[in-house]
Structures are given as structure tokens and as C-alpha cells.
Image (cartoon, rainbow, N blue to C red; front, side, top):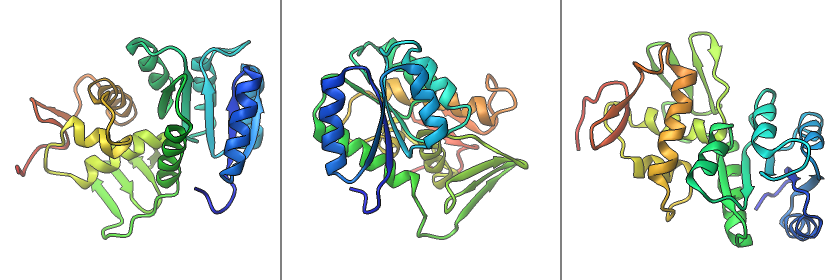
Length: 235
């Protein structure tokens, strides 16, 4: 876990649950701040600039989905939605609002720590291999800086969105399966690739494509998955 303290915001109104989670995370080296309602969560996120956010869906004043949308207007910090709602539509709503991942309550602490570790790795990711930058048309991806641009405009990518774009850029010229994209963004061993990858592809297209309904950059490949640009190489 982190060698230097990462500030982590827990937005949840269940006092006993937050107390227990705070104790565990502080022992893991995090600096934990908490909010018991949605309005305070947004205010703390803007003022304290946490590096990671755990956000409950059912929280007073402003629900988790709206909190996530508001936070995304000023922050790209990784957000994990914590929810007792495990239906596909609920998960999709959280990811569409800008979350990077989700956990259905109750969950094992070990699972949460693994998700946080994965998000931290990608937030501070620095590529060790050359080249350090990818260009295709007006799209530019900086592997070292974890940034991307369309022309001169930087793209406001969340951690999950950048991870998927990074994988597509590294695989330029070939089709990437949903399973491969899934394991590059989230932790291997999960079974929700068919649900999550299309949501993330949709979000990326909204930010990259001039016309998301007729994409020119992120292309769907029959059966095989997705590619960045036309497929020119096959396994």
C-alpha cells in the first residue's frame, strides 16, 4: 500500500461502517476524511482534493450519482461507488456518472484494498517502455504523463477511461477483446466485462469522437472487440 499518505474521502452516512473502514484504511497508510451527506462530500472533494474517493450511492441531500457528476466537473480523482444496489442498471448509472469502479455492499476489505491499490498504480503510472507518446490523427496519448489530447485540447479522462485508451493505443493496429480491455482496466477474475466495457467505450467516444454515433477513432470489431483505428494486424 502507499508509502506516502494518499488523502482518501469516504462519503457515507453509516457511522459505524465509516468508523470501521476509516480505522482499516488509516492502518494501511491513507489519510482519511469523511462526509456524511452529499453536499459535504462535494465541498470536501473540491477543497481537500483527495487522491481517491469512496462514494456511497444512498447518502442524504445529494445522491451518489449526482455527487459523482458534480465532482467530475473539477476532479479526475478515481472514484469507487459503494452500493447495496447490485442491479446492472445501478452499476451502469454509477459508471456513466463518471465512477471508475464499484463495489456492492457488503464486500470484503481485502477486495476494497486490492481495488484501491490498482487505482493508485494507474493514477501514478509512468511508462517504462519506449515510445512514451502515441499519435493517431488529432489524438495524442502521453504514456508518461497519463494524459491525452484531441488537437490542442486536453481530454478530461478518468482513471478508468485513460486505462482503456492506453490499452487501445498500445494495441494500435489490432483488435482487442472485451476481456483483454476489461483486465487492463479492472482486476482480473471478475465476470462483468460484457457490462462494463461498453459503458467505458461509450464514455470515451463522447470525449474523443466528433460524432460518437459514427466513430472514426475507437472502432467496434465484429465478435473480436474494439480497436483504435482500422485493424491492420491479426494474431
